[in-house]
Amino acid sequence: MSHTALQYLLAAIVVLPLVGAVASLLPAPPGLKGKSPGQAVLRHGVTVTGAVLALSIALAAGFDHGSPARMQATTDISWIPALNIRIHLGVDGVSLPLLVLTALLTFLCALYSYFKMPSGPSPKAFVALLLVLESGTLATFAVLDLMLFFLAFEMVLIPMYFLIARWGGEGRERAAWRFILYTLLGSVVMLLGLLLVGIKGGTFDMVALATDNGSNLSRTTQLIAVLAIGTGLAVKAPMWPLHSWLPDAHTAAPTVGSVLLAGVLLKMGTYGFVRIVLPIAPDGAHTFAPYLAAFAAVGIIYGSLVCLNLARRGAKGDLKRLIAYSSVGHMGFVLLGIATLTPTGVNGALFANIAHGLITGLLFFLVGAVKDRYGTSDLDALSGRTGAALYGKAPRLGGLLAFGAIASLGLPGLAGFWGEMLAMFGAFRPAEGLSRPAFLTFMALAGLGTLLTAAYMLVVVRRVCMGGNGGSTRPQTAGTGEPAPAGAPGAPVDVRSYEFAAWTPLVALTVLAGLWPAALLGLTDPAVQQLLRGGN
Image (cartoon, rainbow, N blue to C red; front, side, top):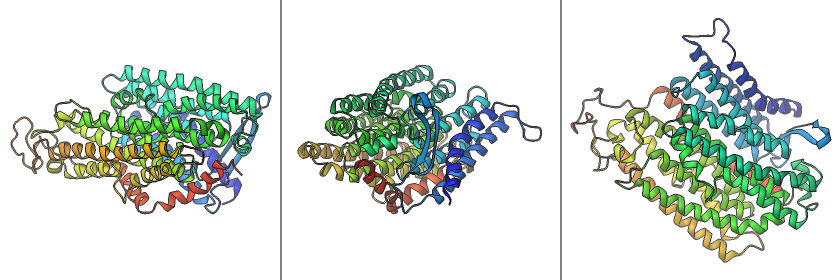
């Protein structure tokens, strides 16, 4: 595919959701209203996100896979000459998978919402916010100017705030405020770091700065920049101990909000580390790498121990909250891989990013379905003889939940395995100048985290799928403990057709990435090698 065609494709991918958001607020044309205006605007959301996904797949097909380290589909137009800020877009092997993942998850969320719209205000506002969120996320992965990166990074905050505050569940206003305050405070600090880099480096162009590899930035400047930028990115990642906004946000968010928050928004922070911090301020990154690795290792253990506590009987643990805390642990592996400053570790981090988006997105879809059927995500309520017992009452849903759990714990042959393994391999032999004994300790803690993850995930599967007392193989009538005949009013509905359509791509890609990791690593590795040596 020609360079011009790729340019137009990438620009359309970023701009089309914004145009669709504006169009969703307008009255539906005659003949397209369907049964109701609400149905029409939800269908509009599916159409726009589907078109963006199709364009993303076309971009991936036209991408020169023989040169994934080269920036492709580039657009470079002067925007604010006085500040030397340019509209600079492009994709390489690092950003392309994240673009496609964002387009896929947003489309699946729009499709799911068409059939299962979360309770709340007008569908028009819901679809408009969903599309603005998609545009900001796609732009974050496509822009190559530090100021545009910051604007795109901030663009997603307001839509997510309103999705939580207006369509969320219990405690949504408090969770939304914590989300916006934490992320905004982190972003203010990050902006100061980005401005420092742009002013001292003489440009805001991320490609030019990466090529310079910090040669125009003094060591002191790099240290301050990494501390400031890294703090803002760490809040979004989320890195322990800056993670405390995340469990509340996930617990209160509607299902599609949780899917996008875990599957896409958390990746913006780790992507920033790889795209900005490592190549632009290598000396600063090297200095702070052991601290980042230490926080990552603590986050892995902390997230796993909290999940174990939530999963135990009598803890009144919430299943959505448990999955949220599991993200703290899984993203810890991503940060550990980045902190090794090695191609192996960074490739593992990027792989774990994609795997986490697929698997945790699927898990939040499944938890939302369980909550819809039983009216609660409380683990104590879902276990026991009158609880969910999904294997007997909704076997397909139970099987999918078990699949998501074993994928999350890193079973070999599924996507979750490779990222965690490569991150630990990177820690086994970190970059030159980093303390190998310290990183071996971090690797051992990460290995312990994988065992703890397996423990709490298996406890969840046993309690929710089998029941706290070993489970029942047949549906039971609510409140009696007696088996209910198939199709009885007390028996929950198994996987619906629209749920099957929304979840199947995530299952298929989780298996595909696990069996054929070279498809993703072949894209990321050349780009990572180039970034780590300064874009040369």
